[in-house]
Length: 454
Image (cartoon, rainbow, N blue to C red; front, side):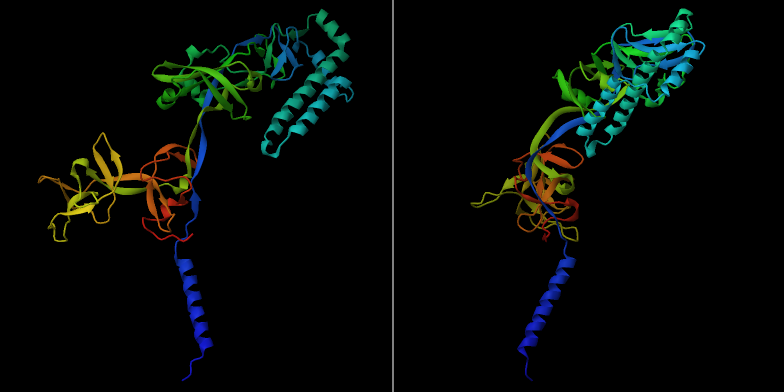
């Protein structure tokens, strides 16, 4: 029988090829992550209650209500804000005049066109939500321009109605920001804040522009008369401790990602701690709000940055410190005198087993070890004595699997800070990770000493 060398080579290659395909599909493939130096911005989200100096202006008459200033606009002393028409004739003429297509002055048109151009230049796809704010602002500008133009166009009628005291103009008596809503919290102060105010289900906000009519004694508008304002929010003990020694903090408004610096103080009422943030600008941007979502930007934490998916836990045997000893010879290894438990419940003679301490709790005088040849049920003999300790207590340590050498080795981590995606850990931790180490991206998928295929 003659063997064909070509057939033999082909069969060898085929077997090798099949073996590699089988190995590829049966082995666990692990993605790796290279440990890097990094930072995470520490921020904490809160919903705060806005406290301002607010003055509500009430109607002295009943009738049709028309506004001439858009919401959240600065008004100087004497600025026309709204009018009340007792019999409705002037209000009807205003509406008819506003329907005219030729009431906007060149100045009004130029102002509106300029606003559109500026918005178009600054628009970004990742901030599309600002379109709604721009739409509201543009509608307010049009309303303001059209109503004022219409009012000027029928001045003869308005003069007559004013003489007969049936048409009444309301001008701002002091400078401020005009807001067209009330919520009963206009007189609120920081000292009067209670926990119930942060139950949003109890909050009620009344718009003043929806009815078109007003009764005598009802609110027309309100003026926010001071640029100084406050945000107050309840905080927990951890946040109180983190901010205890400071006076100024940076905050970010979630609505538009604007940032501002605020002085702050912490007060306690009825057992609850409250953070009071005092600001001197930006109020006009949030004049339409009573509650505001913010991030408190405390600090940046730096260290070794790892993905949260890499983090896992591992069981360790807990051994009291007094049971550790050193072996004979030149190695001077730290270990334990172990009496291994047999299947029949008897114990073998004590032998020295080197043991690596992964973590040590000084206050409790205990150490965490992980040795394959020390099992639960074994007895640890106290050096120089007869007292024994049964291995039974198990503790969990948080860590990652280092895969630098092609197999998984558990490495402990000491966490500094984390967010939803990454964790910052201390560098230089004993039995920990180092910069540029490669760790398993999915820590829960592998075990100690497992061979890794990347």
